[in-house]
Amino acid sequence: MKKLAEVLKSVNKEINALSKKLDQLSKKAEKLMKAAAAKKTKPKAAVGKKTVKKAKVAPAKKTTGKKVAKKVSAPKKEAAKKTAKKAAKKPAGKSAVSATPTNKVLAFMKRYKKGVSISKLKEGSGLSDKQISNILHRASKEGKIKRVARGVYKLA
Image 1: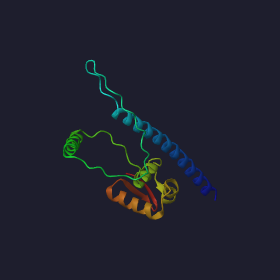
Image 2 (image 1 turned 90 degrees about the horizontal axis):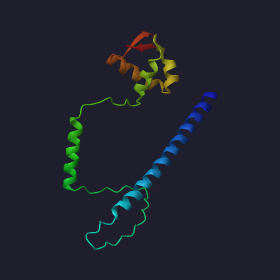
Image 3 (image 1 turned 60 degrees about the vertical axis):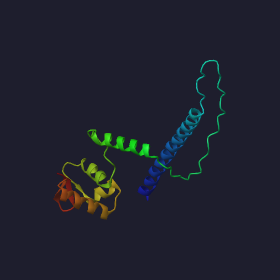
Image 4 (image 1 turned 45 degrees about the horizontal axis):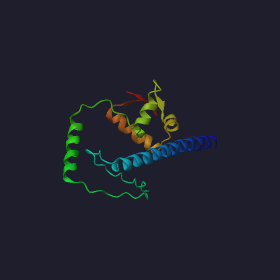
Protein backbone atom coordinates (compact mmCIF):
# COMPACT_ATOMS: atom_id res chain seq x y z
CA MET A 1 0.00 0.00 0.00
CA LYS A 2 2.90 2.35 0.80
CA LYS A 3 4.54 1.64 -2.55
CA LEU A 4 1.28 2.41 -4.34
CA ALA A 5 0.97 5.70 -2.49
CA GLU A 6 4.56 6.60 -3.40
CA VAL A 7 3.99 5.72 -7.04
CA LEU A 8 0.80 7.80 -7.12
CA LYS A 9 2.63 10.76 -5.59
CA SER A 10 5.42 10.53 -8.16
CA VAL A 11 2.90 10.26 -11.00
CA ASN A 12 1.06 13.29 -9.61
CA LYS A 13 4.31 15.29 -9.52
CA GLU A 14 5.09 14.33 -13.11
CA ILE A 15 1.60 15.32 -14.25
CA ASN A 16 1.92 18.68 -12.52
CA ALA A 17 5.31 19.28 -14.14
CA LEU A 18 3.92 18.36 -17.55
CA SER A 19 0.94 20.67 -17.12
CA LYS A 20 3.29 23.56 -16.27
CA LYS A 21 5.33 22.83 -19.38
CA LEU A 22 2.14 22.70 -21.44
CA ASP A 23 1.07 26.09 -20.10
CA GLN A 24 4.46 27.56 -20.97
CA LEU A 25 4.33 26.12 -24.47
CA SER A 26 0.81 27.44 -25.08
CA LYS A 27 1.90 30.94 -23.97
CA LYS A 28 4.88 30.80 -26.34
CA ALA A 29 2.60 29.63 -29.16
CA GLU A 30 0.24 32.55 -28.53
CA LYS A 31 3.16 34.98 -28.65
CA LEU A 32 4.40 33.45 -31.90
CA MET A 33 0.92 33.65 -33.43
CA LYS A 34 0.65 37.31 -32.47
CA ALA A 35 4.11 38.03 -33.84
CA ALA A 36 3.29 36.25 -37.10
CA ALA A 37 0.04 38.19 -37.45
CA ALA A 38 1.86 41.46 -36.79
CA LYS A 39 4.57 40.54 -39.28
CA LYS A 40 2.06 39.85 -42.06
CA THR A 41 0.37 43.23 -41.64
CA LYS A 42 3.52 45.37 -41.50
CA PRO A 43 3.32 48.27 -44.00
CA LYS A 44 5.92 48.51 -46.76
CA ALA A 45 8.49 51.30 -46.69
CA ALA A 46 7.45 54.57 -48.32
CA VAL A 47 8.95 55.34 -51.71
CA GLY A 48 9.71 59.02 -52.33
CA LYS A 49 7.09 61.43 -50.91
CA LYS A 50 4.22 58.99 -51.13
CA THR A 51 3.01 57.61 -47.83
CA VAL A 52 1.61 54.19 -47.22
CA LYS A 53 -1.40 53.75 -44.99
CA LYS A 54 -0.90 51.42 -42.08
CA ALA A 55 -3.08 48.37 -42.06
CA LYS A 56 -5.07 47.50 -38.97
CA VAL A 57 -3.82 44.53 -37.03
CA ALA A 58 -6.43 41.80 -36.87
CA PRO A 59 -6.72 39.93 -33.57
CA ALA A 60 -5.26 36.44 -33.54
CA LYS A 61 -7.80 33.74 -34.31
CA LYS A 62 -8.63 31.34 -31.54
CA THR A 63 -8.15 27.71 -32.46
CA THR A 64 -10.79 25.16 -31.69
CA GLY A 65 -8.33 22.31 -31.41
CA LYS A 66 -9.19 20.90 -34.84
CA LYS A 67 -6.31 20.40 -37.18
CA VAL A 68 -6.91 21.34 -40.81
CA ALA A 69 -4.74 19.87 -43.52
CA LYS A 70 -3.15 22.49 -45.74
CA LYS A 71 -2.56 22.06 -49.44
CA VAL A 72 1.10 22.08 -50.37
CA SER A 73 2.01 23.66 -53.67
CA ALA A 74 4.61 22.12 -56.00
CA PRO A 75 7.47 24.54 -55.14
CA LYS A 76 7.09 23.77 -51.44
CA LYS A 77 7.24 20.05 -52.12
CA GLU A 78 10.47 20.49 -54.06
CA ALA A 79 11.94 22.58 -51.25
CA ALA A 80 10.96 19.89 -48.75
CA LYS A 81 12.67 17.25 -50.88
CA LYS A 82 15.85 19.32 -51.05
CA THR A 83 15.96 19.78 -47.28
CA ALA A 84 15.33 16.06 -46.81
CA LYS A 85 18.25 15.26 -49.11
CA LYS A 86 20.51 17.68 -47.23
CA ALA A 87 19.51 16.12 -43.93
CA ALA A 88 20.24 12.65 -45.30
CA LYS A 89 23.72 13.68 -46.46
CA LYS A 90 24.79 15.07 -43.09
CA PRO A 91 26.83 12.65 -40.96
CA ALA A 92 24.99 11.25 -38.01
CA GLY A 93 26.00 12.78 -34.70
CA LYS A 94 25.27 11.47 -31.25
CA SER A 95 21.60 10.64 -31.24
CA ALA A 96 19.56 10.71 -28.06
CA VAL A 97 18.72 7.24 -26.73
CA SER A 98 14.98 6.83 -26.59
CA ALA A 99 13.40 5.66 -23.37
CA THR A 100 12.18 2.27 -24.55
CA PRO A 101 11.47 -0.49 -22.04
CA THR A 102 14.54 -2.37 -23.30
CA ASN A 103 16.75 0.65 -22.71
CA LYS A 104 15.26 1.10 -19.24
CA VAL A 105 16.10 -2.50 -18.32
CA LEU A 106 19.62 -2.31 -19.75
CA ALA A 107 20.28 1.00 -17.97
CA PHE A 108 19.06 -0.56 -14.71
CA MET A 109 21.33 -3.55 -15.25
CA LYS A 110 24.38 -1.27 -15.61
CA ARG A 111 24.17 -0.58 -11.88
CA TYR A 112 24.78 -4.23 -10.98
CA LYS A 113 28.17 -5.58 -12.05
CA LYS A 114 27.63 -9.11 -10.72
CA GLY A 115 24.13 -9.43 -12.17
CA VAL A 116 20.58 -8.60 -11.22
CA SER A 117 17.58 -10.81 -10.52
CA ILE A 118 14.31 -10.66 -12.40
CA SER A 119 12.47 -9.53 -9.27
CA LYS A 120 14.79 -6.52 -8.88
CA LEU A 121 14.37 -5.72 -12.57
CA LYS A 122 10.62 -5.80 -12.12
CA GLU A 123 10.75 -3.44 -9.12
CA GLY A 124 13.31 -1.09 -10.64
CA SER A 125 11.80 -0.75 -14.10
CA GLY A 126 8.10 -0.97 -13.24
CA LEU A 127 7.47 -3.41 -16.07
CA SER A 128 5.46 -6.63 -15.98
CA ASP A 129 6.94 -10.14 -15.79
CA LYS A 130 6.02 -10.81 -19.42
CA GLN A 131 7.68 -7.61 -20.65
CA ILE A 132 10.87 -8.33 -18.71
CA SER A 133 10.92 -11.93 -19.92
CA ASN A 134 10.60 -10.82 -23.54
CA ILE A 135 13.24 -8.11 -23.13
CA LEU A 136 15.71 -10.52 -21.50
CA HIS A 137 15.14 -13.14 -24.19
CA ARG A 138 15.61 -10.63 -27.03
CA ALA A 139 18.68 -9.03 -25.42
CA SER A 140 20.32 -12.39 -24.77
CA LYS A 141 19.74 -13.37 -28.42
CA GLU A 142 21.39 -10.13 -29.53
CA GLY A 143 24.30 -10.75 -27.16
CA LYS A 144 23.69 -7.69 -25.01
CA ILE A 145 23.28 -9.66 -21.78
CA LYS A 146 24.40 -12.98 -20.31
CA ARG A 147 22.74 -15.36 -17.91
CA VAL A 148 24.80 -15.72 -14.72
CA ALA A 149 22.49 -18.07 -12.83
CA ARG A 150 18.84 -19.03 -12.87
CA GLY A 151 16.91 -15.74 -12.89
CA VAL A 152 20.09 -13.62 -12.69
CA TYR A 153 21.40 -11.67 -15.66
CA LYS A 154 24.22 -9.20 -16.29
CA LEU A 155 25.40 -7.08 -19.19
CA ALA A 156 27.67 -8.82 -21.65
